[in-house]
Length: 435
Image (cartoon, rainbow, N blue to C red):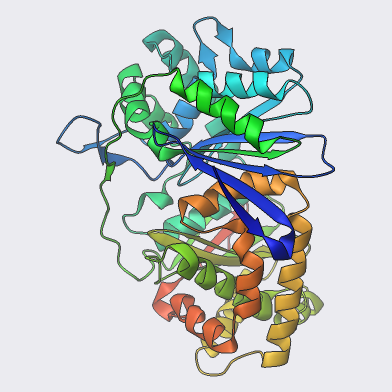
């Protein structure tokens, strides 16, 4: 077992790769009574086209299958897994993102019993056509619920604007039509391809003894049999650099319009520290241009073009990336032009100086230091960083090292006019023309 010490943060991370390929990380936290354990596979909604394990020809599975599989993992022949966690006083959950599916629990007692339950239910799939068909109705209701949420529709509407072919444009849950095509055979194919230990990571944080926990996990995995690890062959798609749809809108039952400008990233082929550095540099640039202490924000708020719903963000994974800026507003056209002007002007004249950058860097470091006191935050974020060959605990020193030149270079990824798109949600009775 390796031990990595992060002296600046006073953290010690323990790591071991087991013979079956499973990566195990343990982070003991002094003074905490709670323990979080996450078991995550590098498999998300964008993994729709791939070569199944043991085969040679690529297939494309129905949209939403990774999320569907997450739901079905909790149902076993002898009952619902949530009940087992409940017997130990543990709280269990799961989520599916574009790139990963995570299963987790938190507990203050019976941590090893809950860890055993977590490992067993994720590594023992059970699907039948009857239970799969029953789940279609449940997930169909979930899809309908999200379809009625304006913020969710604005988020995916903005992504759909940006991408021609990349599956990130597809809702993580799929549609009622696509999930209706899912079979038990589909689920087993995806499970056996993506849920091998060599494609997974177990992370434990909190009130845990690293030696005891590692020994427990090591023994559990040694008692189970898995096929030989093999390379997962994902089928990548060609994606142009420009936005697919420059302007789009949707009418919903809302009182106030929602307007979001999105920026498609050019640089999406980074991994490791280069990716971490680039991601943080873009985030700092957005903080400087659109943050709540920026001239833009103060101007927009004074004019009444934005309200408390205002937000901006940057998302980056291998193969795709995008920034979004938007708000509920009665002035979507004016807000769109203002957001784009800040970005477009930044290509020729920086809207911030070195002193402002240093101030935003200190604020960003403060955010990370506060967040690293939350085991919930670390448990939810650690795996995403590791799957991209990054380390969450490297964020603070990387921010400290970032220069103005780094930020300016990173900004070029989202500055092109051809990479911009606008998505608006309007009330049902709105008769204004599309911007």
